[in-house]
Every structure is written in C-alpha cells, then in structure tokens.
Amino acid sequence: MTDRIMPADLSDPTPPGDDLQSWRRALTADDPDACGEAADALLAHGYAAEAVAGFRAALDGDPGRRDWRRGLIRALRDSGAVAEALSLCRDVLRTQSDDAVLHRLMAGLLLETGDSAGSLDHAREARFLAPHDLAGLAEVADMLVRAEEPVQAAELLEPALRHAHPADPARHPAQVALARAWLVLADPEKAESALEAALEAAPDDPAGATALLAQIRSGAGGDLTPAFVRALFDRYADRFDSHLVGTLRYTAPQALRQALEGLGLGTGLRVLDAGCGTGLAGVELRPFAAWLAGFDLSPRMVEKARARHLYDELWDGELVATLRTRPDAWDLIVAADVLVYLGDLHPVLAAAAGALRPGGRFAFTLERGEGVRLHEGRRYAHGEAHLRQATAAAGLLLEHLQPVIPRWNKGQPVDGLLAVLRKPA
Image (cartoon, rainbow, N blue to C red; front, side):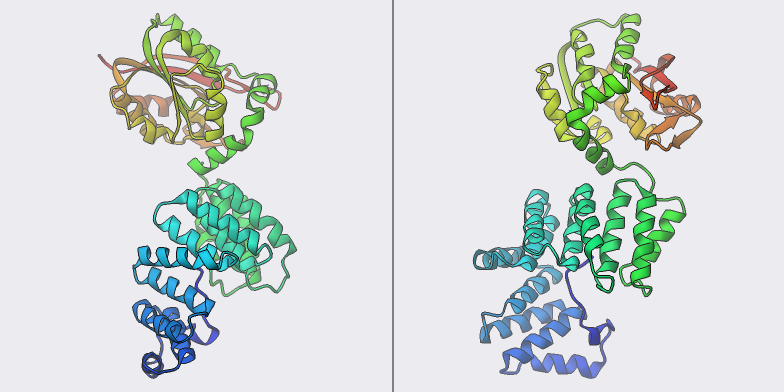
C-alpha cells in the first residue's frame, strides 16, 4: 500500500506526450501553483526526480504549502533520496507536529531504514491525530504489519471498518490491509472474509485482493509465522503459567527431565532452553546446568522468565535463526512444547546440530500425527517417519523416543512424542 494519491484524471501510468511536455514546461513557469500541480502530476506518473524539482520551485514561491512539502518528501523518497526525505520530514514535523500525513510519511521512511521502533511511534501518533480517516488508518495498519505488529493492525482496522460509511472508498484498501494482518497471524479464514469484503466494496480491485484470495484458496498462507507466535504468547504471558499448568495439565518439562536422567545426563553442562516461555522448563533444567541460557520469540515471556532468577542469560529471538548464531556452544538444548509451532522439522534439527557440541543432546516434545499437519488448534502434529528423516538429514542420532502426554486439550490427553537426539562425538 502507498500513501500516494493518484488524481482521478491521471490514473493512466503512461501519460500522453503532450501532457508530459506541458507538465515539464510548467516547472519553468514563474507560477508556484502551476509548478505544484505539475509536480503532483509528474510524481503520480512515476517521474519522481522531475517532481522533486517542481516541488522545490513551487515552495520557493509559496513556502507555507503543506501539501507541497509532503509532495517533496514523497518525491525524494521515490527518487531514492531516502535520507534527504527523512531529514526534511523530521524538520517539517518540528513545526507541524499535528499533521497526521507527515507522521505516516515519517513512519514509512523510518521503516524503510530499519527503525521499526521509531516507525511504530509515528504510526501510532498518526492514528491518534486522525482516528476516523480510514484511508490513513489503512496506511498505518500496513506499516504495523510490515513492522511485525499484525495484532495491532487488526485491532486498529476492525472497529474502524465497522463504523465506516458503506460508500467510503477507503473500505477496499482497508479490508486488504486487514487481510494481510490476518495472513501474518496465520488465520486464512479471516483473511479470506476480509478480501471478499474488499471485492464487494470495489469490484475493480485496485488494491490486489483477487491475487491474495487466489493465494489463500490455493492452500498458501496458512503456515504459522513468527509474528503469529510472538503475538500469541505476548498476549498470553500474564496467564500462561496458571492456564498451562492448571487447565492444560502441562507436564512436558518434567517428562523431559525424567528422560534425560534416565539417559544418565550429568551436571555442570551448558544448557539452552529454546523457546523458554516463562521459565517453567528452566526449573527442571537448572540442576543439570553450570550455565543456563534461554530465549523466546515473545519479549513478554522472557520478562516473566527473568523474574524467576533461574537463568544466567536470557534474550528474545526466533528459534532457528537464534540456534544458528552460536555454533558448537551447548551440551544440551531443550525445546518443551515448542516445535509444535513449526512445520518441517529439517531446518530446526539442522540448526540444533550446528549449535550442539560433539556428544551434545537435543531433547524436545512433539504432538503426534501423520506426516506434518497443521490442525485446528493452530499447532503442528508430526509423524515419527518425518522426525526420523529430519534427524538423519541433520546428522544426528535418535537416542531416545517415547510416547508422552505433554498436555491436555478440551479435556482430552494430547498424543505426543518425546525425543532425545545426540550429536556424534
């Protein structure tokens, strides 16, 4: 999605030669309004570098025009001068801090330069300043999704769409932005519903709902993304322990400890709790460890784990990427009820193999099924054959495999597997 508004009479991206020449002639006229209008037209048709010159000339004649300042920032951005656009936008915001459009521009520029935190600050300010501007909210939601905050995007757009006028042309891009949020959150059914609403609002489909809908109906877009898992557990952190232990009868950490003791695992080890959550597994792992580290995708879960004062080191990070950062570092890696959020086990087992010291072990639980299947609980079940294939491909040895009930769900025990893999010495 873009913050650029295409004038109705300029919707053809390839303007007639006469129009293009007339816009270029207007840039040399001693008329700020003519320069500004020509710059708008040139920018809308992709001539960003020429639009920069036009907006500069227009502002020389009338430096107070907000729309031309915004246009110059967009033209600089689109011509590749992102740093200059960022600097100008920052300068203008010092005197026009109540301008929601400028805050949206700033959010997009910061996101483009990798400053997600700064981008989110300006996106939220834009939402505050223009809470009923559906087109603007759709832009903000798009930035939230790109900054890996899809829950906030959905929470922003759903009420706005409920209260929007049925004829508001922004309903179409807003529904598409909402669908993108639901796709990142691995909820294709809600995404499909939003896209159908988008096409109902605008059958000509300027925002590309049809292509996204085809992707969903082909079976793509249903995998669990890191953003989905992080959002799930950030929201779950405060009630995680009581719900998991009390309601779901979660016993995976205890089962893993017992299996490791049965294999004669010693003490004084470097131990990594991968996907540590609030630290429930850390309680069981601490006796094995001279150094106990943990990480989780959810920052709020890591805060809860830190409060236990069990770990020597804690951080937040994605599972496979984090395992790859420290080769040959660990005697034991444990993932209790974590791999249920991954489909194919090959990448994570390969990453664990690289992270283990020779002779080190990777212990984890799975939900048992056939092949690899994402079930209705938004968790994966894995078959034993897939586990064995991924283990062999990673160069690991399957040292121990047993059936286990890691937790209960809807009053029924969950059929699971507990595996301990070993890296050859």
